[in-house]
Length: 71
Image (cartoon, rainbow, N blue to C red; front, side, top):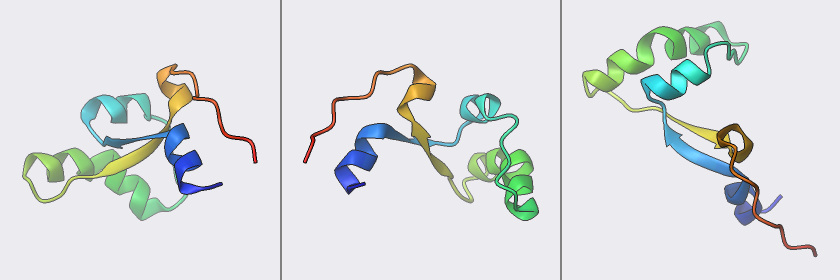
């Protein structure tokens, strides 16, 4: 997959309270990272310590995928 194809299928979003609510049952399988996403992301953002972002598949927003170029 090329960069353009990747970017045409995913949205780069800030990890906000709303986004976290939609990802409630997400687990990456690494306990420290799971704990960070479940407990620390919002607090760090509110204290302006850090901001976290995610790549989100377009179909989770119910946005149709744009046509891809065939090679």
